[in-house]
Image (cartoon, rainbow, N blue to C red):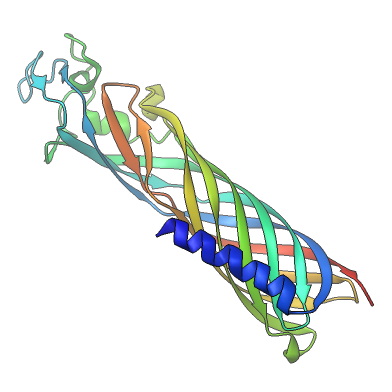
Length: 261
């Protein structure tokens, strides 16, 4: 499915550049307010034995490989930057290559579960392998939201500008590309996740442009951007974790058009 989407987008851009008369080159840059969607993290463990979570989970309780586990992560609002270069066509079509970077801090983690059972009330030693209890529950430790999620991407975008409306006109767009997603979860300073993965990314856009001069535009834009779940390794105990990566971005930007007339 992803391969087909890439091929379709590539063919569309090639057709746009050959069928429609080239109008002008452009470069653009924007800054964004990022709303990183909360993640319902889920995965499976490797073989390990628990620390001292007595009386609920005694020290040395075996956990079999493939046991499901996970928790919920809420993110603070973040920020993003974008730079794009491309071509505008007389037809209203516009194609561009966009570089993006985004970052959002973790707000909190909650509802840690193993094999479907929430263990927020169990002493946190259960996950560290320690024979001595820590005096703080799993829920208390993970509620301290340290860490962040950051993404670097490159997208191939196709837009349609409703240029017949004059100096102020709306547009819509869509893009496909790749995103390198870096995840750091360190609640209470305990490193749980510090890993990254590169995934196929998709985005949908809607915005409006105001033509200030013959060559300079100001634009505002909303974008929804996502990747497939990011699979990372657990640094605290053996296991994999899938993290959801969905973003809502509200941007303001400046575009410079190299007029060919």
